[in-house]
Amino acid sequence: MRAGDGGHDSVDLVRPYVITNGQDLPKGDEFELVTLVTVAAGNARQAQLDPERRALLELCSGGYLSVAEIAGHIGLPIGVIRVLLSDLAGSGQIITRNPVPAAQLTDIQVLQEVLDGLQTRFG
Image (cartoon, rainbow, N blue to C red):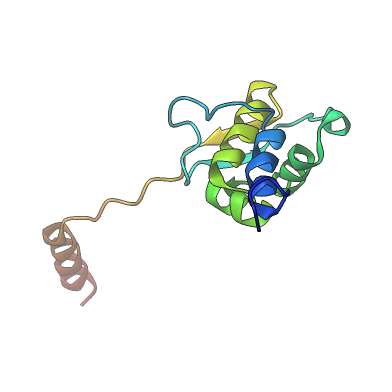
């Protein structure tokens, strides 16, 4: 296929630009891959949105999903998802939170002392 005859290459480049209205990626790390997203309470302006943003809100209405999960379900690149999420967060339609941090491991010495105490007391 020659350049300029409207093949998939040009469509693949233009579509994300159109979906994001030409916006750049948001600054900062608000939308890391593990950032959790859900729809804000009282979200009534969904009818005014384009299909991609509406699909994103419908997907997130069931509870918290990570940015990576959203991109996988919607089928758009992570950068495009981040731009869409930034728009929706700016208009108050979604809320985000960091994932629950991994639990810290307890010192093995403390666990051994608890076990020894329980064995002494209960046999």
